[in-house]
Image 1: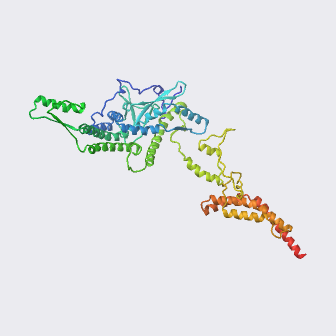
Image 2 (image 1 turned 120 degrees about the vertical axis):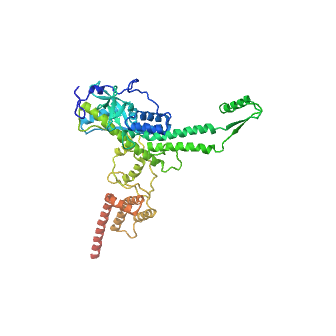
Image 3 (image 1 turned 90 degrees about the horizontal axis):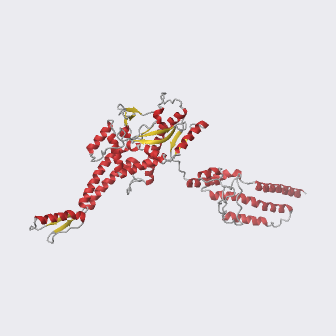
Length: 542
């Protein structure tokens, strides 16, 4: 295999790349066993653990983080929500260019991303959200003559350090306890900081640690309170003549009656149950404090509380709170995509094809959800007014396939039959469907047209000469074209919401109005008028 050069131009140790170098093993420096610094946690101890991490020794801090995630249901719930929301976002690959070579490289990455294990691998990489950073070892496969990531293995961050000078560059602890820089192309080093500053201090769990500790105090006090006041205090009374043996019998009965709910005492002895009058109010203080601490953790992790805590009268609507969570999700997705492009995609391409000018680009983002109902409501009137839209575009928006030949198609229901007095639907404009649906014309216009048609259909009194008969015939022939044009104009009037809109519609549709039949009738009328005038002048001169 040809020698592989790293980004610094130096040869890469391919033996190291092919080996699994950071696996766990008991009785070694990378032991999976850990201590439990969260046991007996109190403010001074917590502060010492955090200061120790700030000095470059984060082992106890990382072990504390693990314990907090294991013991605090609320924290693991909101942190898991944030990690899983990103790990399930679709991942896409953009080719570096339209060339066949770049498209083939992008397709190679797409095929690899189709693995079922990817979601869990991404979830493990996002462990950096809580701890501030995470390490994932790339297990390379070269069995088919090319470099392919076989799997992405999470590695315990306790097995890594940061260089002692800057506390920024990650280092791998070897079996000899030496600290070495991470081999190029071997690890995904992920950092998604909750705050700016040192990586060791940038995790969300560092913020949650204080709330966790105070909540544990509250829960402990709540448990003691419940044990002491959740049931009445037992008071045993004995007479002055009671012997020591009788007193011991009474004490055993009082002590055992809490758990056993039953006891036997002599007839001359008495046990009273004394109840506290403010148990409910006092118990509510512990619950309110624990809930308040949970809300602060929700704000730190998700940026809001509406999706995790039911707060009556809380500020902001659920939609606004979800928008805040969406912003955080988008930021996490962009940060993770940049990390994977840097530590996985680029080394992968360089191992197979050498240095490239441009590389396939991995993107993690939710597809934009279009409001199809709003789009339909907006575009239908525009189509009705002459907007030309390709059918395939609309079907693609709604995810509808092209109809198969011979398939039974759904069609719009036909409207009520038109009245004989109503004009026919307007003629299609520019080869498209009718611009407006034909509605019944106003009663005044219909009556006028009806009267005009009736009068035109009857010969005028005294109209026995040829010009008068021709005039009547022209009037009858002009009725249908006039009604057609008026029908289109009336439909515009019905569809418009204002005079300004009607004017704009009329100006836009005027050049397309079907005026051919009416123009022919008017030409006949002008010819008739000219001929009648000439005949009248000839009669007067004769």
